[in-house]
Length: 361
Image 1 (cartoon, helix red, strand yellow):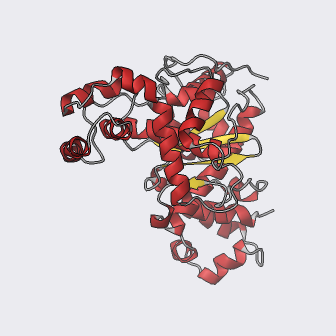
Image 2: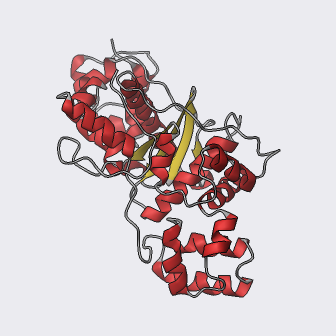
């Protein structure tokens, strides 16, 4: 039986309007609307055309409905600058993440949620960051691999595809499972800060009944800066009134961008307004797409272990995609940017964050 909700999701996933889709398959927008509103059911020939235009297997359109990600419950940065199409493409990717996580959780014992819920009207973001660090036994040392840290504490981390390149990252809750979707086409340092920023939303803004606004974004930014660069550690190890070369060298301790460290030093009173502005001017020459002395991109420990275990059972990524009624390219889009080795072969990637142990069930 044709599932109208899946047609809408597939269309949004590809960033297409009803008119775009109608033109692509030689139909009218009214016909597409009738399909999506359950006022008409496409013929097998029409389903084949929809499948070809949207690049989803025909079986995708007859499978059970997927759990949707609410625009209210998801965190998006620069929401005011985002088009509805970009938002819907990201949300539809989130629905596929939920489906993949559900498939994996049926087969593996994944880490349970350990993300605390804190009220930003009671706890300021810097205190919240220290609270999470204390609960996760990090103390005030550098976090190490941020993706590994999230995964070890029950957060499911996935990558965003090309269609969502305008989105830095977003996060959401599905029942008691936290999700973070990261743009892996930005700099590695940008990705680390985005991961910490989304953790801030998960900790501080769970259950908010309205879309995230400027205040929530600022709270998440402050949380991320404090979480990645604790006050005492920065003041103990960062140089005072550093030059650009010293900033570039020092940033590797906290796995952050030079701009993020420069900002944190200024907020902590370790540099003057003039010194901060001078460094901003010098760093602006690199632009947003380049980072001086770049770090290696963080990889997923959990997904690497999952696909290694599946390979040992003779299950390839094409089999996983088929079970989810997806093309393999859509599965790759959710995980490829976060997995170091080939998903169908190669060695298992090295890890440096303890605590992510998997067991087939």
